[in-house]
Length: 399
Figure 1: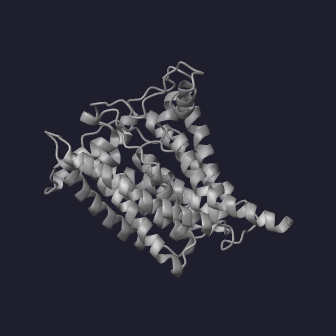
Figure 2 (figure 1 turned 135 degrees about the vertical axis):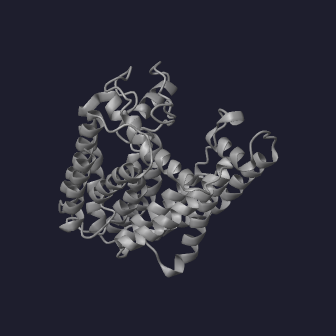
Figure 3 (figure 1 turned 60 degrees about the vertical axis):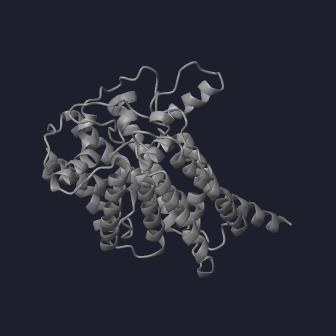
């Protein structure tokens, strides 16, 4: 059965990359989707684990999911849209404001980190205290770090890289260092992975990113993630078995966890898919339905985890039909952005980069709808420099 699933993924990988429907761009949605699942399935075959074999539930779901995303993204990226001038559709005035905000906000992050490190945190290390405080866990329960400027850092870095000029090299370096510092101070592996993916995504439209570049970069970031894990958990990975268990937990455990789900088992209509909407309605008093916890319930068998692949909210809320419908929605959205970005739209290239990590980490969990409100905020922050430039050009044209 695994071999059959790999063949399906290989078919879509060949369809997108092999016959050049994506213009040799390895960050095309269909390439990312099929490639990620091929890697996961191969790891499931080769790693040493005692996870149960796939059930028909996962097999059918992943066939629907991969097919839906690949077909819809390939269709929409192939649509012909008018070309845009990539050098004249962003406001450098707004980018300069973003950069200034980034510089001025950095001391607040440092102040937070110093406060965590110097405060009593018996029983846990300083690195664990930073991580728990960032997430609002343990003794810091309910005190999650909410650092809005990070959205501006991320958006500014992506746009600066998209419109890279030698005269603005310093801005790119400083913004990149700010994001790295955020990852170090919050002990967030995910921050480094996002930075890596965002960078490659933008460069894939500007340069000829080849597979060897991605492999070298992936190995480097993987080694760095291992170091982060050791520091964060005070653990050791000196043996092959420890590394194997790390890969089982973070690369393939989500697959087996998916088989523990019950389709259409949600209490309220779309409570997981539309969690952000329920949260807004509840906060303004329109609905008394509490939003579902963004931290999903833990299971102990077949593996200790609380991640269930990106199909989780759609499957739990709407069953197989939900997996099908939302695979089409996600694939269409990403395919549209990718197609426009290939034809010169800096706005679409920037938004695509913002969202690219969601496609890459679909093997782990849903990052599209579960945190919809946060994604919309990031997209809005990314879009503002383009909107400002658009209206300025419109005023000049009508004056």
